[in-house]
Length: 119
Image (cartoon, rainbow, N blue to C red; front, side, top):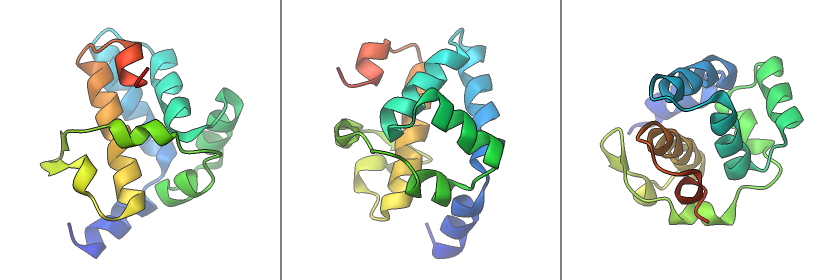
């Protein structure tokens, strides 16, 4: 993916994509709470911290830059998102965004929370 595409994605507001994550999960009989738990697991945000990020309208770059503690087990997330293997993405920010996409995909596909959260 070229830098122009990356920059466009990095500048997207997390708060504008978050409802899409929730909709995708809910269409597959999963809950907003499971989406939040997944995001908090990945980023280290508390529920309050996640809510603040959404209310502040931060872009993906800021959202991940301010993440309290990226989960070290995210490195166990494998697979393809948008035709690209997440474990092979070189840009750390793009990789974190795609890790999140992959986790939401797994949620929507009915994986158990233990598997999604790599427990």
